[in-house]
Length: 213
Image (tube, rainbow, N blue to C red; front, side, top):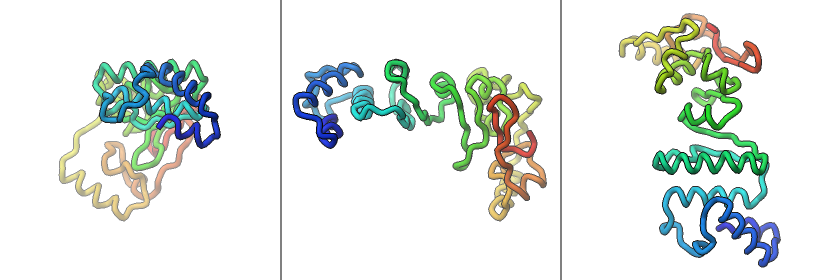
């Protein structure tokens, strides 16, 4: 499958062979494996081949959607290190999509947090992780080891609501034009049900979508 993109670009056979050999070497796969079938590779090896396939088109921008979510922790580290090395080597830009905030903060210069398909907060990684402002971001940060203190650093105290209260909020949200996070938010009030907040800048590239921040 590594050759398909090169064939479509009209690359001659001799050059294709050289490029495939170089690409496999780049991602840590032996060229002697070139004729193996997918079921003969481990999960980590498959991911390396996918990366090589993407690089065969000489991109400047790559979308990485949960690139290590189904891999063992030790293999995850290898793939992340490989992606980091390739980013530096080829001056690549990544759109890194993941539910793992620790991993995102390690890989990314800027983080955008989405809820129900919309950006609710965006900031340089160090700022967002150390000083989250949106209630949803704070809840996410508080769920990772050592994150509770950072999530509460702005005087935010998360309170557990009863199932009945949450059910009532969810029911009200069905016909409400307001904030999509309102049913889960400890800060929500009438304003949050009547209008959806827009993204606004706080400082230094830190933007948030919340009436209460």
